[in-house]
Image (tube, rainbow, N blue to C red; front, side, top):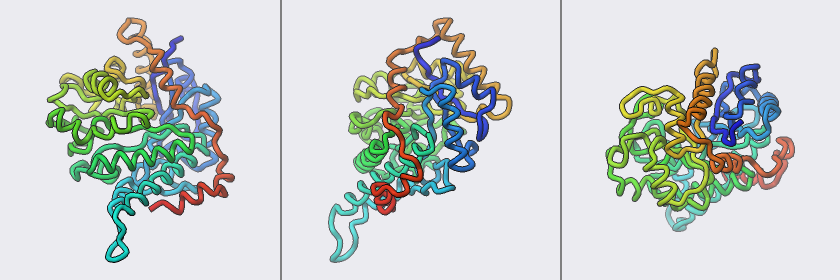
Length: 363
């Protein structure tokens, strides 16, 4: 038995099979990430999340549910949330002519961002989902196709304040948050799902711009996900596998004390370390040794799920061989992401004044 459950895994379908239950019951498994393939309707999703909690009630049930094009559940009553760029555009809109009021757009946008966070959090929690990997803190440089309209704005100050407002809404819904992708994925064109992006800027330039929201939000962020991007003037490894980025800069200099998730270990940007193609186990060990508390492996349970079983066994063996040490602090950070309040039932939510007002405030 271990005191640290770092693995966030996925499940194959809309119900749990015997292999899913076996993997989720393993003491190294700390949570589940859901995808659109795990969705049919709200009743099915609630049944799925209930069955996950029946295996272990401390499992963190996660999803990528940001709004815009990254929203896994879109039917059966789920609100279609706007892309975050829409909130940035609202920030810039103070009206026109004699009716223009300087700063009014910014105030409307922060209110709308809080509303978006509240709607997002309450709808997910009503279906048994604990946590969403949001908000995106990457800057909108206009270059990155994978980030694009997922970003609030080009200005890190606007990004920080809109993200803080959205996180306020999540907090009202009883949900933690995750700033991503540290220290910034918006400058590079390459998509780390299929390539290994390289950002050749200096540390000074990155800290002054893309990474600026992180220290500004250090008292608000509950978790962070680093980018599978290499910043060679800082470290030759991607940020999610770099002690320099995670321990020296994020933990010590920026004084961040929340959970750090690796991004998906099956992405191309995670498969190559020091110029070599590595196994999922080696990638997981490298991420944990660099300073990640939790590591994700996504979309590998489909089919025979061999890669998932290999990772569980491999990480177990790596621990026994002393290649990584379980962390009580990491486990505490994982448990801190679990909601502390009971969710509102969906039918009750539909009549709740705060929820109805939030819907009216969305752009």
